[in-house]
Structure formats: C-alpha cells, structure tokens
Amino acid sequence: MTLLASWAGRLHRNGESVTWVRAQPGRFRPADVWRQVGRRSGVSGDGDTRYVFIGGLDRVEADRPGLVGEPVASAPEDIRLVVAGRTRPCAGPTRLRGDGSMVDVPPADLAFDRSELLALAAGHRLLLTDEETTILLQRTAGWVTGLMLIVPFLHGRNDSARLVVDFDGDDPAVAGFLRSEIIDG
Image (cartoon, rainbow, N blue to C red; front, side, top):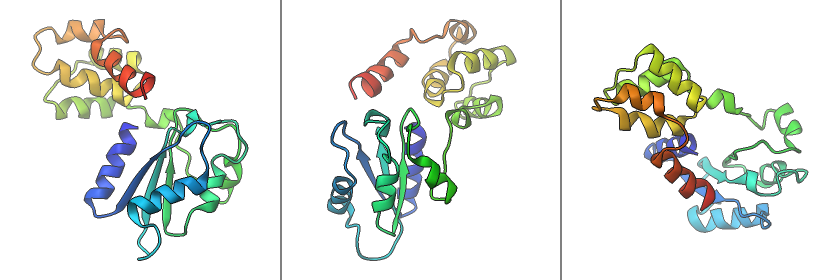
C-alpha cells in the first residue's frame, strides 16, 4: 500500500483525479464502488482520466469468481482502475490479462533490490556496508515498508551495525505498523 499511496500522491500532485475506496468484506459490489466514487469526485462529465484505487480486495471473498473482473467490466470509460491486495485473487483475472486490461505486478517485482536499498539509505544520509545491506534484504525479503521503518532509525546512530544485525520482526516500529495497518485495519 505504501507504493500505491506514493503513486496516488504523485498523480494528485500532477493534477489528476484520485479516489481511494476500501473494499468491505462481505459487501463488495461494483455498483456501490461507483456510487462512492461518484459522490467523491463526480465520475461523469469532463472526460478526464480518473484514477480509482481499490484497496483491501484480498479481504473480500478472494476466491469469488469474477471478483476482479466485475469492477473492471462495470467501470466508466474514463476510469483507470487500480486494484490492490496482499494476495492474488484465485479466479477471474486470466481474461483480463489476455485482453490487455490488466497489468499484474507480483510481490517479487515490488521487493527492493540491493541498489534500491542503497539509494534509500543514501536518501537518509546513511552508508550501509555490504554485510548490512545483505542482512537487511534477507530479514525483510526486500519489503519496502520494513526497510522504510529501519533505515531512518539507523541514521546518526553509533550502534547502527549492531541494530542491523539485531533487526527482526520483534521491533517496536514493525509491531506498531503491523498493529495499525494489518490487525486493526
């Protein structure tokens, strides 16, 4: 979601119309989505492309046939639909991939690699050793949010090498993120 929020923010700063919709378990119907979008941004009208981000789709009957295809098929022409979830839907996207309506970004493509982690660290004025870089990538599997939680924390610390070696999921920043974004959300 961090990547999508960044993308949506960039679109908004560039003057694009962006609407977020959170899919509700047991109540996901495309018509409700379009009503919600219409109330927020006036879907019909000026012909500009509008971006609608639907988050949390994985929490909504992910094995329901056509779950992804339903909102795509019912979307107004001026909508660019971005559907996100932590897992892939079990049914429905094959036709969408085949006709070019869907671009699927698998989790491995979202993971940071060595150069991206080093660029992130440099942006926080942090120089990581090869060993620290390897450890962080192994411990997080390149998970952007995990890296974004630890890298700023390491800046200016005398014990950053020890903190990297000791970093695991038992960390207050990670626990706070998981509690607020996953468990409570």
